[in-house]
Length: 336
Image (spheres, helix red, strand yellow):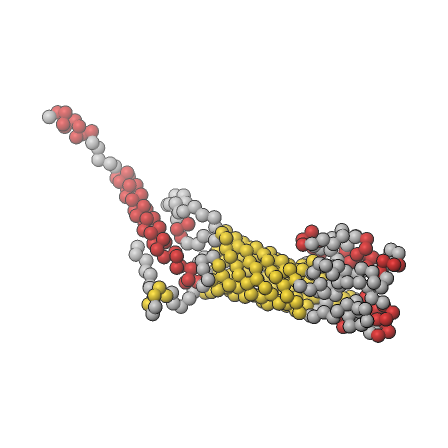
C-alpha cells in the first residue's frame, strides 16, 4: 500500500507554465497542418486570381554597332559597350498569366541610342570620326518564364512572441527569363561641326539609291529580345523588378553605317555638300586610301543591337471571378 502511495506521489502534475507551452505548441501544429493542407488544395489555382499584371519601367539604354565602342576593334555584345553613351529609357508591359510561372507579355518601350568615334582610342574608328544618335520606339510580344518564383504570404513570415521566425524558410526573390519578337522605329541623326543635328538617312551617306551604292534601308526594324530579370514582392499585388534585355536586330543601319565609303564628290554634286561631309568626316590621321571610295566603312556581316536595363513597379490586378466550374464561383473564407 505504501509502495502504491509512493508511486502515485512520484507522478507529478505538470506546472501551469509547461501546460501553457504544450497548449501553444499543439495549437501551432494544428494551425500549420491546416495551413499546409489549405495551401495544397488552393495554391494550384491561386495564381488565377491575379492573372493580369502591369509593369511601369524606368531605366537606361545603350547601343552595340559600328559607331563608337571601346578602345579596341569592334566585337559583339557587351565587350564593346561605351558606358558614357548610356541614355534614358522608359516602358510599359502587360502580362497575362497562362500558368503559375508562364505569362504572355506585350510591351511598349522608348529609348535613345548613340555612338561617337571620338570616344574610342581604336586607331581606325577614331580616325573615321563618325557619330550618330537615334530614338528607339519599340513594341513587342513575347513570354516571361519564372524559373524561380518569389514567395508571397504570411506563412513565410510567422514569428513567435520573442521574434523568432516560425514560418517556412523561403528564398524571397524570384528570377525569370524573357524572349519574343519586337518591331521598332529608328531615325539616325548626326552632329555637324556646328553642333546641329542632321537626319542621316536622306543624305545617302553610303550611296543608297545611286549607281554602285548600298541598298536603301527602312526606318523600321525587327528585333529578337532576350533577357533575364529579378522580382521581389512587396505584398500580394505589388512588387519591383530589375531586368536586363538585349535586342538582336535584323538591320545594320541604326547608326547609318554598314558597308563601304562612297564617292564624296558624287554626293556633293547630286545630294549636298552636307552629304559629302557626313559620308566621310575623317580626321586625316592615317593614309588617304583608308577612307577612299570602296574601302570598309562598317561591318555588314554583323547587325546592330541595343539593350535596356530597367527597374519596374509591377501591379497585379485581381480577377473579378475565379471560376472552378462552369457557371460556379467558389468563395473562400478564413476558418480561423
